[in-house]
Image (cartoon, rainbow, N blue to C red; front, side, top):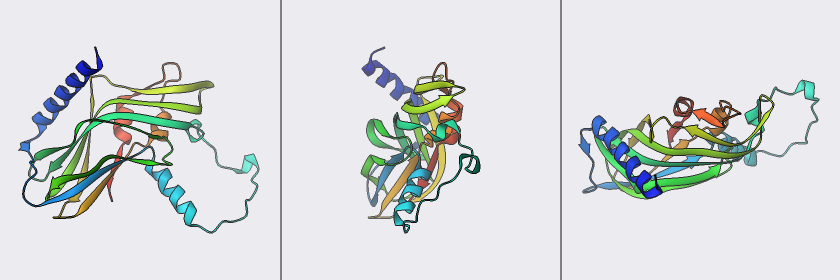
Length: 217
């Protein structure tokens, strides 16, 4: 299947899933605000890194290996994670609004050292949104220093059982006229890297689905 045909199939699948769960569409008109969607490979790590830059430097303390905390294989992993997805806001009324005009492809550091604006300042009707729906069509990572069961792993992908994977998260996004709202999608990559099959490089989609976090800033 060519990329254009895959795109059409993914879009049709996403539309079918959303049509079955929604009562109508939200159209932009009247009073509006703006919404931004930010992607992080691991938002918790980013928060910790930001906090660390605000602290007063302290002399390093040497700790014997036996005294330090046990580290999991994914704690050592470095690299980047890439996702392709469609995004939809669901209003309290049940209407659905697509964010962005087509599939969004984002590549970020898997440890959350950077963030990327997947959708930057889109006009949206001023109303209360209660759910974010993400339809993933591709999830993969290129990694270094990841060893599972003695086997080094360099490429990881989330194995989709269908053409796409629907992830829904409840939110409380009250967009008021003229406001700017920011949604952060935390891919929580180190957590699902721990579930990779070292032989196939695959992660079960349900593991990925359960670990995604969404927050409103």
